[in-house]
Image 1 (cartoon, rainbow, N blue to C red):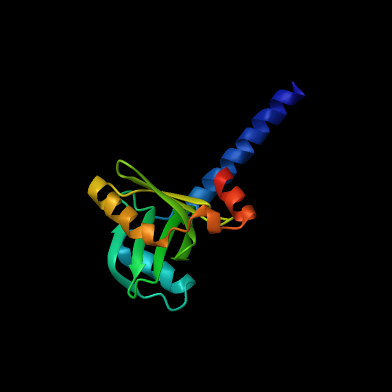
Image 2: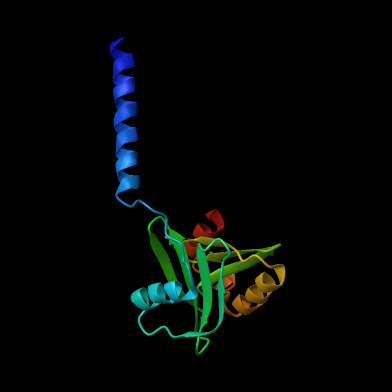
Length: 153
């Protein structure tokens, strides 16, 4: 009987914590516009100037853009209540894969080894894959440790 009361009490307590979080504004971030994503890039990447090539995913959870001078690719991913931001230079991308309207970017980055973006249109996805090929570094030029980590991701 004691275990049953403890289980009921724990369930009630956890439910109460979840309800309080929701009531206090617990939300998942959405990139409601390209401007929102640009603000995250401006906040996290010094000197990044967004060029004309941009793509916001239909689910508002991902954003890709080229820098105005073409030197870097801006990547913004909504995670929880914040965003993960990367400015990828040539050689920081391991591979780019296209399956339908889904673009998978594999990077030499221990904290974000892979980004999967559903761009919504197959033609747009292939266009981005073609652009990103210029930023791909072949595994033979990567250190053994980087290549092993990227393989395991």
